[in-house]
Length: 269
Image (tube, rainbow, N blue to C red; front, side):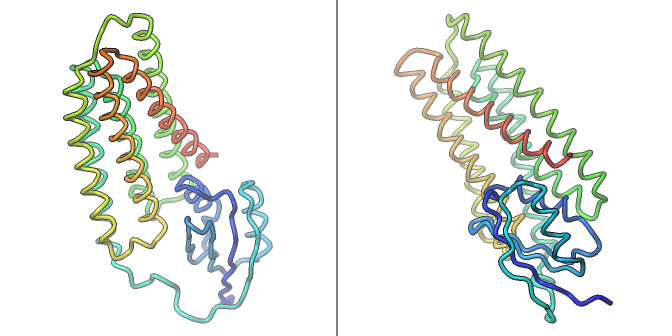
């Protein structure tokens, strides 16, 4: 059996979960024993039996600014081998369920209240639920299946976001309508509470330092910021008596959804 090597890389442009997933797909090989990501420090430790040069070339092909820091023989047990993965999967399923439930709630109330902000936030919730679903569904699956699922999720997000942009344009050309600011603020406050609970659950996880759990923390933190944005837009609709704040927050969130979709589609290349 080949000896185990630990190679430590700095990856300058690895600053979000999408880059992490892209690297995981590219390094999907029986010779790769374990990947230890640190998104905050933008570093990666690869435990492998393959050639370090091969890993360098693979990372270089992603154009993420990777640089080998050190490569050394590793004779200890692989890190995190004793982690309770069932607890992590359970927490991810809870967060997925919360995101999907509020996708339904917000898209229904968004159409009823004529709020683009709520509709956009619902698509962001759906986007996060798709990301969590990809992570869970792809566990133990072949790389080809991961890429197929990622491609479907990415294109679905882009289609929904483009439909959202077209609705923004339609409403901008006819500003006579005014969204129900009370519904915007109440529903977004409920979504804010749900995302806060999700964040607290994830932070209490025993494996919160692991990369995929850090990714979930990042997504949920971003959701909380968006929820505040919709609440503020609702207040501005009331004070200004104008639908423009609602349209503006909707455009911002649709743009975020498309950026997320593009990152997901990069996994399918």
